[in-house]
Image 1: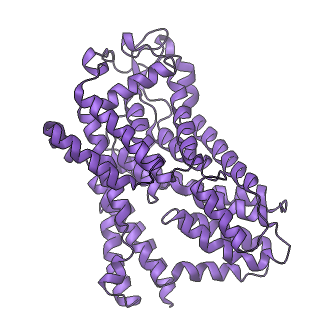
Image 2 (image 1 turned 90 degrees about the vertical axis):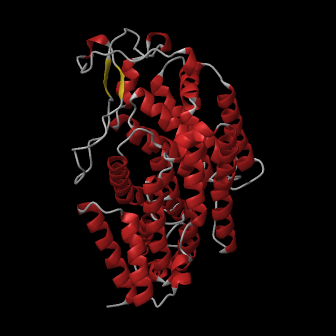
Length: 466
């Protein structure tokens, strides 16, 4: 059995054990990286640790630490109420506001994980407050980031267009941008409907003055559209589903206790909240204007706030998402071992040698989606586009459509909890059963991997664009 095949089978075993037993998948992946890297790939410790995502580790710790402080001192509550006022109480608009905000950030040049790191904690705090499905809100943030991710001045767009130019392939910057925008907009619309967005519209506007009741008043009800636990998840011990307001005649009331009325303590700006808001603004400016690392900037700002208000810091330190950090860093370290031993290149070259161009095209889209769900989207695009060059040069497959399909397939799967964006969403969600939310993200990511590459191939490659 080839080393590459062994490494893939071990990854499958890791998934099976983590799914059926109560073991952190990251810990299993570290053990697998040690075993496969040392025994199969003949890597030493330095070679194994070469795949450790140090930058992502700092981003996860820094961002969750900063926003844990924001939660501890009430800044996120203040932002939630400000968002409600901004949309005139229409809670159903908030997911689309977050979609548009992250899309605008990436379209003007923000790195996708940086935009998600800025927006996701606020978006998911809002979801927890108003009983919106965290899967819905997280997906809207990530898909928004990818919707704007291929504009001609964006990071992803510049990289892909540069690869196309270097490989002397026909390219069209506008088609690439609009393809990603349209794909993510359609997916966001589907997720909005499936995860209860229409019920949020039917609920009407909330009024902060009466405690968040709908237009006709009423008591809270279970969150509309909250996804059921994924197969194999534990029902026992799951965190209660957040509550939200419902009309009196909805017939869904389960708790006669009305939602708490916002107090001046929640809605007023205090010195600590003002400083925290300034820090969040500084994070945006540092990342977007000065191109500083989001993780290092966030943890520095968190340290400054902790020094000034140590009581908030003591509460926040325990809220850093350490289990998520272990999970993501472990899995990505193992994926780094696969990359180091050539497993990913081996799989891509095997597909590229297939003699049927359309079949090779759809398989490359699936490889891009599957690998990108665990690794760098830009990295996999940089590897797969050159692999597609030989059969693109024959003229049987349109280069513009193929590049667009690869770009969409390799980025739309960033909702996976193993990707940087999905990990940030998982880490940023307050007051949720993280194991259940992780499984929901994993199932949703699996559905995206299974469906989107085929759809992108059918719409963009089969017609022969370019």
